[in-house]
Length: 501
Image (cartoon, rainbow, N blue to C red):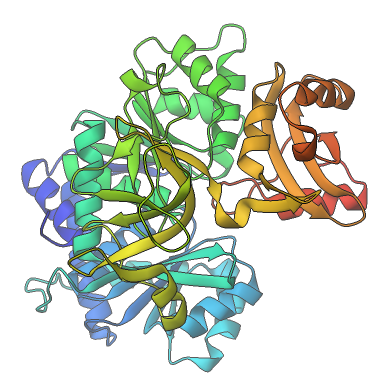
């Protein structure tokens, strides 16, 4: 799929200028209105010295300014950097120093943190409260500067096993291909309303903007507060038909929908990625919503999406993460890089137009993960994920290489232990944390059962060598800024003897 990120907005505005593009608790902006905003912002950014290849950093909560500003940056051939609103000053300084943005937009409440972070860069700082109206008062940009679709469009900072966050580099071509390929499987329509309660700094959240604009649908953009007790009310108020989920959000949705006299929203499809969605959650969603289609998706920021499990395949392939996207090649290789036969577990290697360009300012890591592969010597992504493929081409995720830990002399997969725990009646969530100080491996679960009962049932499902050293039942799991279970916080609060939640 050719074109630029901002073309998704312009094409929708040309087709449906009066259709709602983004709906928030503060109001609605149509496609025509949003396009006009982004053209005025682009002219303002250009007047402030933003040029092709410059970075524009956005430290903002979910809202229209994030979307408008990133589209404006795209028009100029600049690179947008959406930073999670909850980023602490220590990591913020690292990101700002690494990205060296020409311009940074934030809120007054984070201004002091930002000003401290930009002391080592030549960055101009603006705030929504003080500058937004003046920016929108500029003339509209009519002629965009020259650029090509292989130009860098985005830096997405992602955490991993390498210490401080590193930025994945995405071109316009990467983004447009990934959005089009995902749409081929989801079949979204212009009548859909996508409810987004995940951070726009999370690539799963950010791509909902692209997927929605691609078909001219409506993005109902919620806040972190909306993802709590008011979630069901918001879904009904906005008549949400599509909902991207992570396990904690799915847990809240199911709890609210199971209440007596709960009014269910008109959901047509839900998606999941980023963390394993328990089978019991999928079964509950299917039983509550008769018409809903649940898409289990698998990917990583370095290539956005790899595979999707179509809903009609779920019952016969429950443990699968689906089949590869169109124009995507997935190979399973051993430690020497040789292809493995069907059913064997090895490292997943991915080739396709959505494989990103590597990591910003990190050539050594890039060379390890992005390497020539195959007869043609094309660059492929060595994911670090342990995966197998069956005879029908369905992929099965067995954990990341860094999720494998040694216990009692054996290699143990955290994912395998977690799936065994999720098979126990009454367990809603499970997270394994190995190497907890003076304890060993701890399995944390939420649900309606005792620790003794969980251990007894787990013994029926796992070999002795794979059993955790203890089980801890907690009220809820702490989550990271990206909506994933915060295992480090689980371990810290466990050791401190406090109630987790």
